[in-house]
Length: 168
Image (cartoon, rainbow, N blue to C red):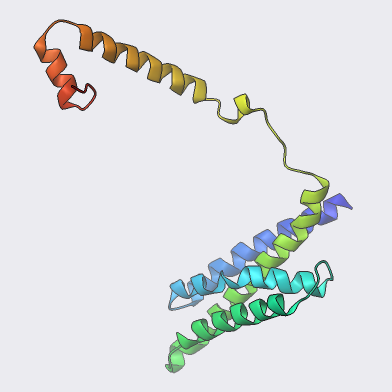
């Protein structure tokens, strides 16, 4: 059963990318794709209410209607009346909407998997393996700067002051 859920999540992720890329190729105004992204959380909310995972209240329903309606109004207001560009633009818009729906489906399909298999936790020392090296390098640089500052000679202190390393 877990492999089926993994296949669903993978199919939704691939469909999101495929529909978005093909829609970008067909649309004469690729920036319109950005108008469809704000509708994705609204689609997730609508689908979770339809699946009865969450309760529906008036604020949620109004938010879904306003978000999706505003997205549709803004996106279709960019269509012009030219006959040649209209068919490609409509196909691009349909693919953008499909990508938003597939992205919402990805989020809904991955929710049970994340609940069953929480993300792996690593100890703090393993999260950033280069951190110790960076801290050690900073300490060495600080010590070198202090030695140069104490060293005799105006030239060295002048160079350090000019670089903003030595104050005073």
